[in-house]
Image (cartoon, rainbow, N blue to C red):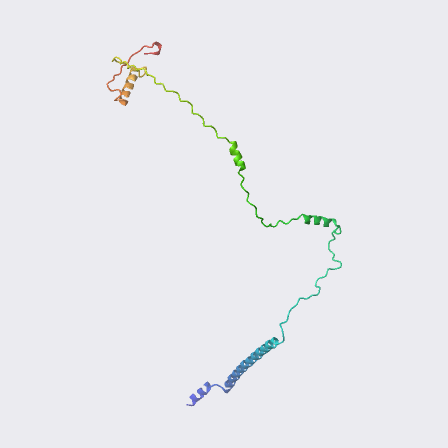
Length: 206
């Protein structure tokens, strides 16, 4: 039991720790109280100054300073420009100013409507004469004439006739041409025969 009592005594807080914690709590309370008092005093001063200023008469008016702010120096200095005292420049400037004209819009004035004059139209109509209708040209008289009767065509005698289809130097060439023509014109050359004639042309051949 003695050992357990000694151990429990070690676990208990010391009296100094109680004192330190109590001091910290008291300081915090004091700081908070002082802060509230200072804020209340500051707010009261502001409220008092505002209320006191409102009862001191009209609102102050701020006026501009009427004293001269800028004065021209006796010796301005700078670049000296010649002929500044000549009046010829004033005359030129005045002439130019007189020539300037104001081109502003002017008020519109009512204009009378022009009256239509028909006299020129009537005069021109009188001068222009209507052309006389031209008489149609006489039509030529149609004279009936008897047309001579056309004589009937004379019938020719039935007989054989020949048509030359070409001239060749060899008989075989003429035969080849006839066979080709018969093949290309079967209906046209039906019932016709070739008649190859040999002609002696002397030096030119047969």
